[in-house]
Image 1 (cartoon, one colour):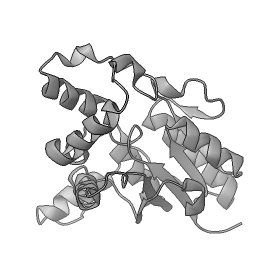
Image 2 (cartoon, one colour):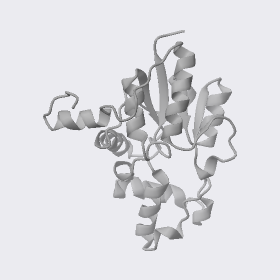
Image 3 (tube, rainbow, N blue to C red):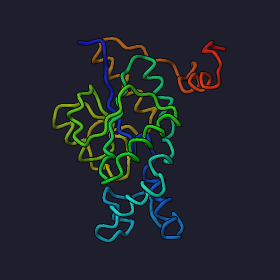
Length: 221
């Protein structure tokens, strides 16, 4: 038993709304209504009617010409829950596989860091890699079926973040970030022996950060 619990957190489809923002950009490129591309989609975007190779090109254009990584909406409650977990002593390790565009690594890294700052997402490590079992976290949150299967095959605790394209994945599943919070607290308690979480609404970390940026003190009201 140790005194540290590391939580590996995926970004796209877990903290950041990748599908929603990508849909907006593809619709803009093709000058059509975003509803032309259903939110309820499979992992390979088959419902969007891409020809072979088109997804890769659309994604390249979305990242390099439309700043997709800097402009994704944050998924509801993600920042507040991560702050509460971080304040309670959870080590937040962001893990994302975004370095797959040739000549686009600078954009991916810079815009990812900027997005995390903009949305006040707390983290202690930021890892860009695809082989997630090598990150050595105590538990993970992910949405990609292949990542979840590989992580679990390596003996890891993994929470599936609910998305239309991972419904076939069995095991622990969170429908939203409040579910994630409850599940992580339980895992941390099992790992550490005791775990005291911060109660919702008590001087949330994101609000403290905003006050510091505005030059205010951290004094609780």
